[in-house]
Image 1 (cartoon, rainbow, N blue to C red):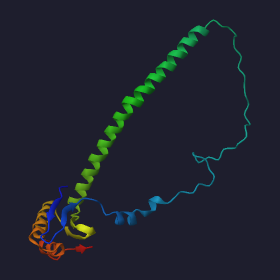
Image 2 (image 1 turned 30 degrees about the vertical axis):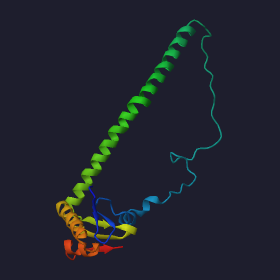
Image 3 (image 1 turned 45 degrees about the horizontal axis):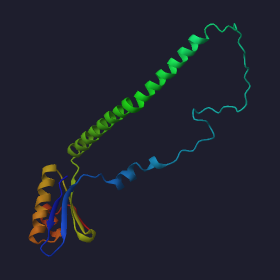
Length: 181
């Protein structure tokens, strides 16, 4: 979002912008229960309470005690281990980063589409905010993206002409929600 920086004739630099950030307080109130901790009743991860003792029976299978295939078994075992190491390295250094990159791009695109669609379909107002020195602030709610950009430019022009920011917001928006801090 492009921020318009304005010098007021009486002094002070003001930044006028259209705010994209969500209303965190409203979201925290609506979805506030997501931080609650779950309490487990001493049950394991799978939800099954397993006994701690070993009541099992260890069976010993017998087989021939020949050493004839041991050399082939060692070669196959080493090949399997080397293959697992190569696959692990390829996965860790190539496939996993590519997978995470694709997932990040998909998540960002989905969030942008949902955010813009939510603003457009539900006609949620954009906040046009003028913030000055020492944290002084004036804000107005404007419905529509183009209207918000026009309002941002009008507020910046009026501050540049010498209006107080609160007056500039009221003059540009009318009697819409105006806040100052």
